[in-house]
Image (cartoon, rainbow, N blue to C red; front, side, top):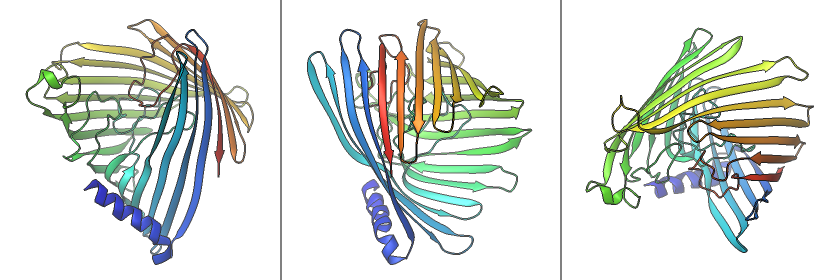
Length: 376
């Protein structure tokens, strides 16, 4: 089913500009990076990634628009460690979607990014993406599905989605979904004083086959339901609360509870010093009212634009359970087509944050990363 959907979407995107006379465009992003971890044992990673993007749009009339996007994520990297070199290469679709939209409604189908919520660094509602706040490019894999959103005149909005064919672990998930059965859910977001309040829900079937939990259970497929509430208020400072509860029919992993408290403020210093702080509690237990295995983290980020070209930012995490401190600082220079980043980090030898990102990273220990990005 997913293959047939992709063939239809790809065909429409490629032949659309010819058949229907749409406006279309082509652009791309070419990041190149080197990461050095000099602490014994010495490690170094070098890589290049290219994401070409083809897009089109067709205005049917003043109220209706039909558009789409096709992009590919291709990269190759080499990792030098323990006197050996490991090559990692991949070519995979990044975005393949079509969208129909009006003034109040949009329906998007295909491989797409779905994310929401108020938190920015430690996000309980990181359900369908894996955006790393340390990544200056904010890259993340998408999910296959259909998303519909309706916007009311008072800024309230309703989201409905259905996903299928997604077998990789997403966000905070421990276990993958059964790719043969659909996932579905929705979100309603309402104005609330000087901010907004929202409730979200998602249902999926968890698959323990080919995982470390497979031998523990005769049954291999389990139901999971996720419930979330989030609130943001902007008055003098920005303040938010974001919480979620996941319930699975698995004894040891029955309940996953996540709570985030955050705030942000821009100080009137120089060109504006931005501060953001978040505190998160993460707990996994067999009963909803029982404390189980978890972690609590505090994160603070600072951002200061030195001028229109140069920006400096920093993120500091503190892991209360392991009494560990994680530090990142990033200086960036942005021009018309080129961007450059110099990142330094000083972390524990074992990196325990964002464990599901999937690609090799040397952010443990002490090191540096240099990145150049060409956009066309």
